[in-house]
Image (spheres, one colour):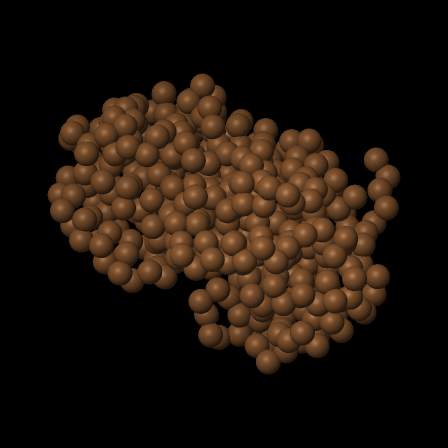
Length: 380
């Protein structure tokens, strides 16, 4: 299909080479990688929770990131309304896309400028799962007050919303019942160039990996409680890879992990995205009883690399067991423990069938042309 190439201005707190903010960076990176529009991304020159700027990158000017992507990495002193107004007015952008709901510097500030310039009809906003109960449970009072004020002042009136699922659409309508148009397009995932070969698995052996921020909404504590509830004996280990931003929560998790005497549990720290495929080869299952995911890029990546997943039923990844791709379970330690025991007992022949099921399902989602077409429609 021949398409008119559009010029799209994007505001996002973080972009590549950053990775510490997780999903929102990967969602945006996959979107601009797949769609054949011209993207201009305005972002910070530092990664999430980092004070050191990216090395070797010019700041406060457009930098060619890819054939269809220009990025402006702003220093803190240049994140101002005047700079935003200059960027927005530099050319007639077809759409202006905000990659966050709450960001003061890269949503609220430029949105204010856009409204002053009379361009709000060109705006598209992606909440990125920030209206899900799990996300709203973090700093709930602050977010409740913000949402109430946003609703009263009509902050988002006139924009187009980018929901990634029917569930997210319902979340938007719950908080903004009289809002404008909501367009649904799922998050896009990468497709590995080569199929991952998984090592043999012995019955009585279980190697689990969790790739997520060490924070309450990711269900790290619930994961350890489930591991403690396993009654079957065997060689069981679980490694947690993720940015450790909440020291108090980490200490709570580590204390509980020390009491799980029959399971080897380690907190391995943050992991660079390019290292994830090689790490996944070393484990049998991705284990992530998250309290909610808008998409779950770690889940998608695990499936695409032949790694079955054991996750909660609070993500878009549902009906996994019938596809032999994994399990999506209610958040109950005993329920997870019984499934983990099945996986512990699983021998290699059966395990390889689940690896194949994971690969087939992950690839079918990644190559879904319906999702790509829906993403184009976001900007029509």
